[in-house]
Image 1: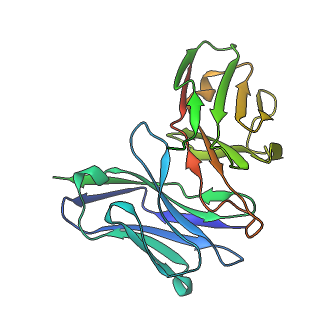
Image 2: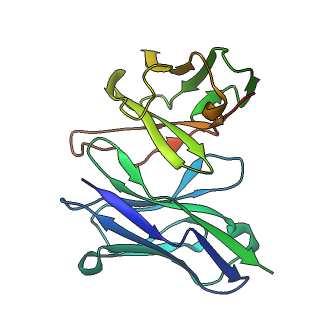
Length: 111
Length: 118
């Protein structure tokens, strides 16, 4: 069965610093992988997705993620954090008929 | 601007009352999911439908929860009777599954229904 593990339930960075949110996946078939973001009092919205094309995927708001099959990882990065990036981030993998979500990582951005 | 619409956005009710949450998926999407989000449990999948047929509702407490899709434009999640432990934000999401993949390529989420059971 497909699953994802997000390392770190909380991550804190300073404004302007690199953002790195970690996600490892388990899948018996070539996976589709996703990162979603949830701002307070809102639903989840798609940041980016990997669907077996380019291994480096660019998303909205300056985020990108790299698919590394050898490491079964799909970490999310952004070169320079902005206060507006404070939110909860979810990694997800496509499973049988559904998406399987990780537990989420809350990103805090300090001024 | 296509979006998933959920009603009500907020609901406060007393223990034992019936609660019905509604979701209008994006037109043309053939898969609908119900999730529950709490601080303690995070995001939990309750049930999902493909072409209005239930595929899996194993995440739902069977004795009090029920989910249906009366038609392609409406999904409902009902709790009867409600209990304080049902207090959570309930999300509906829709997506499109094609012949090329068994899972949706992307899910679109509604803004959620925040339920408080006193």
